[in-house]
Amino acid sequence: MTDKIREIINSAVPGATTYVVSPDGTHFEALVISPAFEGLSLVKQHQMVMRALKEAFAESVHALQLKTFTPQKWEAEKQSYSVE
Image (cartoon, rainbow, N blue to C red):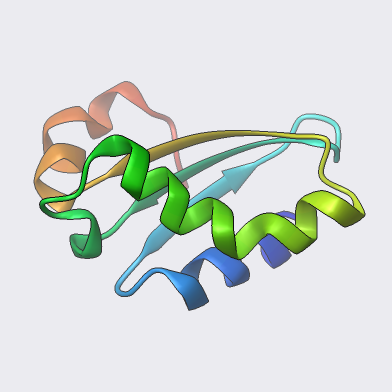
């Protein structure tokens, strides 16, 4: 499911780099970095991602913790995250 979520987000958000992890297969955390977020409020960034994931939530995703970053913000904060 993590690969499916990643693919959905990357298809919907231009230029996205997406990391998705899940400890149990129903709860997920996604970090999404994209230049498409430039100039958008955090709410608008999250709406862009969540619209694309609406079907996945209806089927099998119980919870998603979402964090979005512009490339500049990611460079400033990436040391706080452990991603592969």
